[in-house]
Image 1 (cartoon, rainbow over the protein chains, first blue to last red):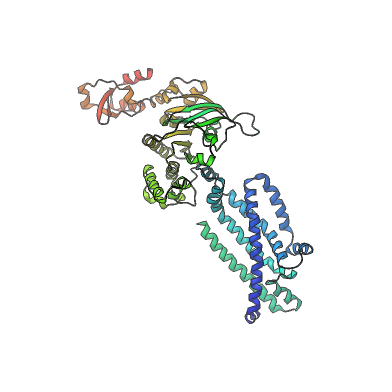
Image 2: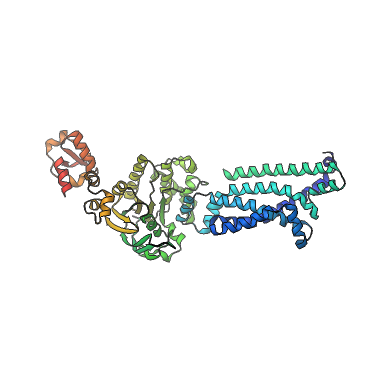
Amino acid sequence: MSWLASHPLELAELLEQHLAIVGTALLAALIIALPLGYLAARRPAATGPIYGIFGAIYTIPSLALLALLVPVLGLGFWTAVVALAAYAQMILIRNTVAGFQGIDPAQLEAAAGLGMTRAQQLWRVELPLALPVIVGGVRIATVALIAIASVAAWINAGGLGVLFFDGIHRNDVQKIVAGSIASAALAVIADALLRGIERIVRS
Amino acid sequence: MNSASLELRGVGVRYPGAERDAVGGVDLTVAPGEFLVLLGASGSGKSTLLRTINRLVVPTAGSVVIDGQDTAARPAPELRRGIGYVIQAVGLLPHLTVGENIAIVPELLGWEKARIAARVEALLKMVRLDLSYRARLPRELSGGEQQRVGVARALAAEPPLLLMDEPFGALDAIVRSELGTEMLRIHRDLGTTIVFVTHDVDEALRLADRIAVFHDGRLLQVDAPLRLLTHPADPYVAKLTDSSDVLRRLSVMYAADAATAEIPSAVEERAQHIDARSTLRDALGLLLLAGEPLLVVADGRAIGVLRFATIAAALRG
């Protein structure tokens, strides 16, 4: 705790880097996962391949995934973003599929029967009804990414992980403890915030 | 009156990979303002045929013509906004209020806000729901109330044609009969052409101007309820409708048609009254309880009498 109190500026910078990595990765992951999840939910032929590919990526340990990406993308921010985005895919796709598949077919039939176009059905019916489950996926993915983003420091992408690696190298327990507390607190706050959003879109 | 004519010309549906047609070459003409019931067991093709009318199912043969225009000539969403559609599962959108659900089609058509609000109010009245229901969510309503909203939503943009796919099939007997009565009243008031799918013979007999009987994707017979019972064109029709059942036959015959015209003045004093729109089945029950004769009354005026012999004569045709 004492390190956190005595280094507010350094902490703020690492926190900002951490949030930038997680936020960018989440956004990129959502842009890919939403259409793929919708496709997997509506086209049974696509479900198997999509689950297969992203399920396989999900099983690669995060450290190993970073190690694999460095020769291709080099060190730094974007490599960390790519690794985290790939890791988040499975969580986001699975929840997107569950969200769209959980819609009562009678509601889709009614929407089509009333004369909504495909786009109107998607924006006015399917997306609002699937949203609570999708936001649930975003919450789980966010908490997971906040934890995993710590290893990004290992490839010079910064973030709270810097405290772990510095602490290990210099045998500085205070720094390791500070990093743990900061990243755990971040995860808890993000979880509470997204739970609130989930509750709002559910009602 | 706002009512469309409907013509099915050799309409057939075969699903990809299926060995036989789900619906085979159906020719059927529905007059403006007619209440036509498609009757058949599940799997008979009646629902599939209904869904070809608003192109939720695209026919693989033949054409559907509404008011002289081939439905294939228009974009499907535009076509559907002009056709009311009610399904058994209701399908109210759970994230919208009752009022917003009813307003869906007028909004798609770009009506002004004030006009939509007035229309929603009028529709709630038509389906006999309190105006306070407008702000409620579908999940707060009973099954019967939900389907009243379903009917209001289908009629929102004053469609000249209304399609109903087993709309009351999931409701209990009392609510079902209540909503049947409401549909007859709404049909009388609006004159909308209605095509109504059911597997319930008594419901079909009660509601229909004409009944079209389906079996294995084929149309077997189209006739008025009484004619269907007295002159089944096919052994299956006779079996399905149990047409030898005398009481069922009396349930589609009406007091006004059977009553003898002369009214003995002495009768008026002590005879039990019965409404001219009552079925002869109800009349027979009343005769058994109250004795002969019954005085048939229309709009408060006696128009004739009914006796056991009059009913027997009407039955023998």
